[in-house]
Length: 158
Image (cartoon, rainbow, N blue to C red; front, side, top):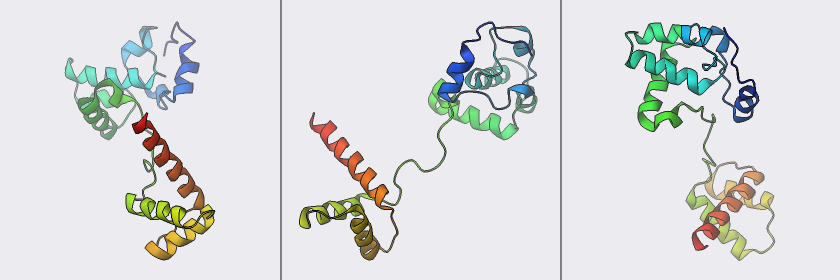
């Protein structure tokens, strides 16, 4: 594989979390001969993989192999691209997207407890949530969720 002419790209890719973990497996000829194409650039590799099927005569299986990914990864990338455009090719953070246990009902309960009982610690609030809703919540999760909720309320006012 040819190195890109622009060596300043790699640190930016690393900082943004966009380094292709399978860069060594990219065997597409564009990435071997042309300094513009960088096998370490995850978004570029995924885009070119999709493009090679759409405008070329490659099958998804052949394209996936040439770009160092599984067929499942090809289809996931295609679905993300069709749904969100180029932004869909940017990797998303794994795991829950926020406090999934802390529903609006629970946060309303916590707010009411704070209003009724001044000076409650987050540990005490977590205990009260456990007693009332039969779920375990870490005190720090309550603290973060309340801060985020207050921030959203102040953003709507401002």
